[in-house]
Length: 67
Image (cartoon, rainbow, N blue to C red; front, side):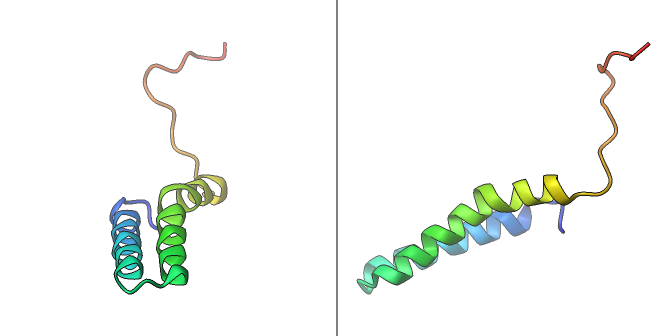
C-alpha cells in the first residue's frame, strides 16, 4: 500500500471530476460513483493503511519511557 499522499489526492480529484460530469450529464449513478471515490480517498484508504500496516512507526522523541 502506498504511504505517500499523491494516490489519495488523485483519487479524490478524480472523484470530484466524475461527480461533476454526473451533474453535467444528469446521471445520478455517476454522481454516486464520484461521491464514493471521494469517500474512499478521504476515509477508508487511510484507515485501511493504518490497520493493515505491519511495520509500526517508531515513537517520536517526546514519548515518555515506560520505566
